[in-house]
Image (tube, rainbow, N blue to C red; front, top):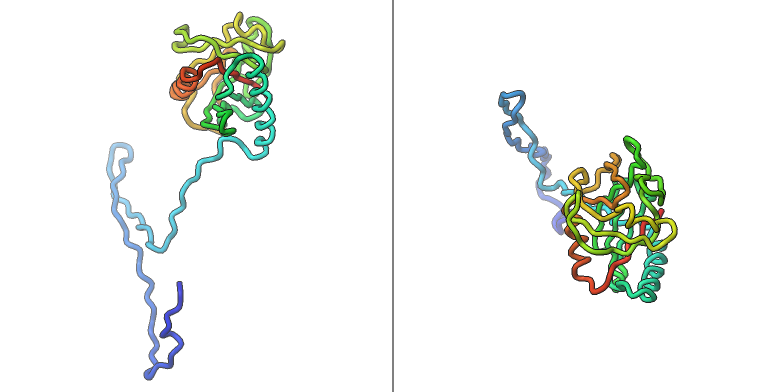
Length: 231
């Protein structure tokens, strides 16, 4: 608070003034407890108190920025050589906990992440797998690392889906294994960390709302998009 210009002038009459701190007003609210209602008093916010706004966490941690930049350059070069999209790519960072956003929609022209969402990893046919393991074997139930070409849209066992074609030795069986991108109701729209996410059977499984975002990017892309699952 700035000082008034009058504070340093001598006063003719010396007074002792008792400062009374204004009391915070109380607002009465009704809450329901076990079928009954009771009245509680809660302090109203002081006008001088600063409001603290919650900030959204960045889509990716700063330490990954350099790596993502290198990765997307490789994707861009690969896309040019193989007639794939040089506008967008999808990145799935399996080094992040499953409760964190780790599916990134990346704009290659602007060199920036458009948005990010949760994505499940495969259970490897176990009851539950908190951290991913990887396999290219048929019926393994595991996720596979490597580059994929996002293929055609279809409606299958899990509804709206996009086929995936493995482009590396480590994911060459993706199409035979029916590893696809699809939505599922056990995947929420927001991060749940430190809790862990449900497992897939090796598919790139996201929330229904995030699937719609992915679908919109795929549909407006003139060429097939590269999806890269890495750790």
